Length: 205
Image (cartoon, rainbow, N blue to C red; front, side):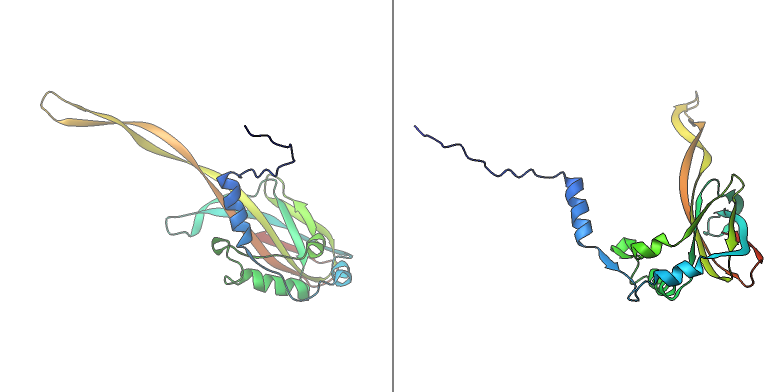
């Protein structure tokens, strides 16, 4: 006969496999930040109000079988366009972000911007025609980007079965069917307002 004294035993709950896989992925991430210190005063001055304007249309085109954007125009309906001042900090960040040895999600490598640097930006929302405007811009260089999600529908004949005629010949039967496929396009552009009061028209694609 055994006797036990009640104690607060430690209990470990095994996480689900999906949680464990995500923890493993996070642990193996290689993250790079710009080495230059972010200058908030510089960024604030770059975003000070002016008399100029950046206006344009955001869109993409569907791709052909070779990956070339030569198909129909897809307008960026109600998406957010972000504008960053091109400061020395941003230039370093962008160079790192374009470097596939530093920024490659397939290899779990990422380049991040300082959270304070991300705050110093302007946002604009497109209308249903993809049009957007950044008013009150002072002379300077800026970077615009947006993410455009869209889907396309495709029609095809779906095989439904086969039959045989009185002569032993096989007949295949098909019925019209369709499916949708989602796409994502990254839109980006560098813009310069050269003089106070200038209206710069752009195509963000």
